[in-house]
Length: 259
Image 1: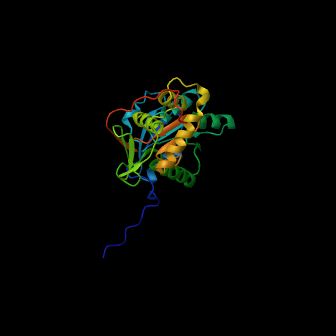
Image 2: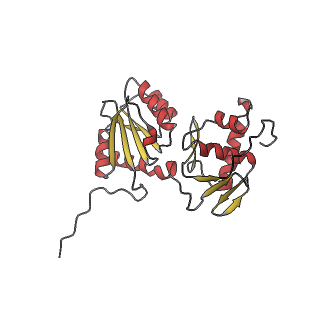
Image 3: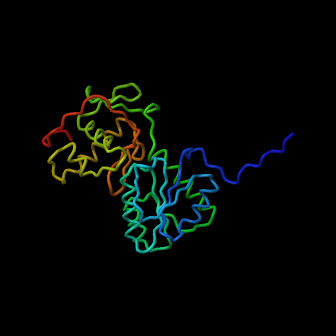
């Protein structure tokens, strides 16, 4: 008989997608060193690039965790976090050496999902990495064929979910279509207001929030998946959250009484 094969010290939890990978944007500070060691322990593929290189986000799948090393000066890191947040990538975290609260807040407001302490102990680094990777299925992945699948039929002006018609208003359909056409990018409330209520004043931004709320309620979606609220930025629909068929919806005048 062959002797039993010892299990590796760390194994990826089942909630981590098998195709998850890590992209580290480094500024040379090595703030993410222990997270890289953790990725090696978990057999997660890692790609390293300089933080100031031009990043073509279209080349990366929505199952990518982006780690941004953040050190003084912070302008480059803040700009890079904001750029990534506007893409279809699922999760972005900043790796930060000890700094004052205002710096951490600035990174979170720029769009970081988390600010990870630089070079934390190995066990903590593994826990951080697993926690961030577990966000990927919620933040960046959704299935059109599984439970809750959505088809937006523009010709019939209706939404189909698991083969059943879901009653939605024209404005809710317009907002859903706009988010779908963004192809995974974040749309601000102002952009959605202009799309569904052309010419509306910014004082009416509450319309967007209430429409998003009704849309989620009708489709059984949370504020994390697949229609995610990006705090301080806007809203993002997972790339594969719905399919669209038919001709485009007509635009509605801003004087529409529907709220």
